[in-house]
Structures are given as structure tokens and as C-alpha cells.
Image 1: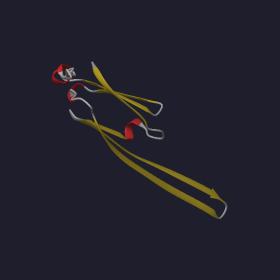
Image 2 (image 1 turned 90 degrees about the horizontal axis):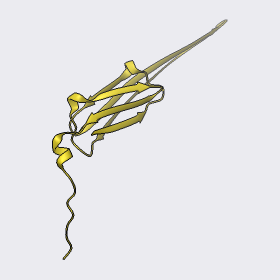
Image 3 (image 1 turned 90 degrees about the vertical axis):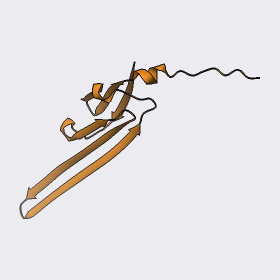
Image 4 (image 1 turned 180 degrees about the horizontal axis):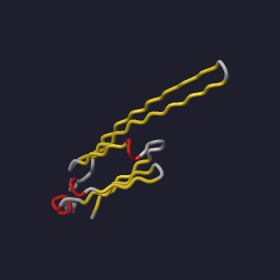
Length: 98
């Protein structure tokens, strides 16, 4: 059984994305840049923009970080992380009310 994390990252390219998976959290980082230039006669305009973001997402159960697999298509990131045996063994226990 796997835990799945999905994130929409519009404007981010695969090469700009950095993913780190720990047993208890996932770290997403991306840096993007864009440059625009216009030249019309004596008019010259140039603009550069840089965007950076970082998100740390805590996981509800422990995962096998070394076996995580990610796919990224059309701005949608999907990470599949198998759960550890210990996290699969943790099941809720019904408590009897006296």
C-alpha cells in the first residue's frame, strides 16, 4: 500500500523541481525564471522575474523514502511512497465503553 502526494505546480518545469522524501515528510522546492525583451526603434524594454517556493508536507504515516517514485506532467506532480511495515501494522483499536 502506498501514500500518494499530488501537487499542482503551474509554470514549473521538471528541471526546476527538487523533491526530497523523508520517512515522515516530503520537501518540494522549485526556482523558476523568465526573461522578456522588447525592442521597437529607440524603445528597449527588458524584464526578468524569479520565483522560488518551498513546501514541507508532513506525512500521516511513515514511508519507505528510498522507494518513492514521482511523475510530473502538465504541471501536476504525483509522488507514490510505499508505507513501512510498521505503519501498516498500526491499526485502530476499538475501545469498549464501561
